[in-house]
Length: 591
Image (tube, rainbow, N blue to C red; front, side, top):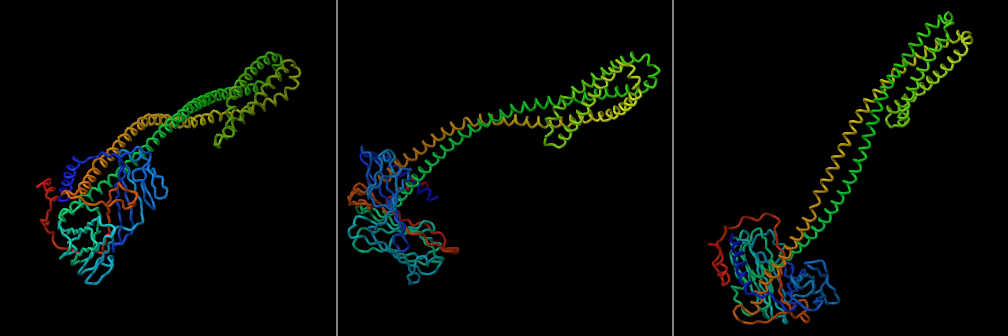
């Protein structure tokens, strides 16, 4: 809660500074922030420079300078033109919200920092302190280079009072809860300046040591310097976070653009899929109609086969009667012509019936031929049976024709018929037997066709259900195509809103956070108390870069123990050691 109140007070104080700050720039200006990762002994591990270019110019390019090992645009994807130590950036990237870019550099710092660690009077490496217990001493030495006497160093780190006790330091100490904030200011000097901290430690862990270098702007009271550094450091962190947030928002915008394109393609695909499904549905209607026609043909075939069976039975009965009557044929030879005439008429009618059966059976034969190679063995067997029956009908038809011809000859020549009657009677007897056999075989045909019709009815029902599902699929695809349609414009609108958010973040960064930071630095350059001081210039290239504001933020890594820290002393009340700025901040705190 105390931390939240402090941040609120800082924000209000800086807001007051923003009111009086000027954001107009007549030329391109540059802020240079050097971030250094230090080894635990104070030597440099790596350096990177975050440059901020802002303002306006009538030139097409702005030329910056620096011997960087790598360069990265922090707010976009476009890179500079690099030739030697010249770095050319298009002015279009700088105008408006300005340009942030980062460069890694290998260069000596303007100060030398050396850090020594002691445990129970024995010097050791920082990593070896982790988890140990005993009397700890830390010495941080700062030596300014002879040619660099325009900088001041602010050293700050925090000690956990659950781990350390009996803290004594040559710097200043401010207690906040269980934390002891140690700070030390080294002003320009030809002599080495040392910050010493001594304490008792248990399960030792150390937080990072932060060292900030700023140009000297006149004598600033030590009691205020720490709080000024906290404000500027916080503004820098806030500004960098805002830049990262802007970059992330830009990536979200790109993602929304890709999403919009993907959904547009999805809509086109849904449309094509719906059209294809509609074509399938149209073909399915044809299949349904064809199956219905085939089913009706099976029903007709069953009816016609039943009628043919009845006709054959009638033929069989007639032949039986003929056989019985043939016994008195010779006795009734005088009436044979008339009987032959009636018989010939009966044969003609029978032949006509057989011809009708044969004609009706022809459609079934055509169906059987088309299904002879069907993949279902039962269907193939049924087709083969029908073809065999067709051959039998063909034989019957031919027999009827031959019988008709024979009767014609008998009618033409009664004498020849009388002479050959015995032979005819024997043949007639055989014909009766064949007819009876054919009748028995033909009786199975209606039953077989009935079985086919029933099975095909089930097949037709299942096919109709399947094709009915295709209709539902087509309707669903068309519905999805309609629903997807409004999405791309909505995403486009969302993308526009996201761009407004990004622009708002950039505006807040440039006209808000950066302006507050620049205003504070300008105030420090002029000295809050009216004194004027020197200027450091550029760290990257002090000869060619003349318009840069510079600061250094250096930090060591934390030292952590591998085991749980032991419980330390109870929380201490904050020491009443408030400076000028602290009292101003208290005006904005809730009581």
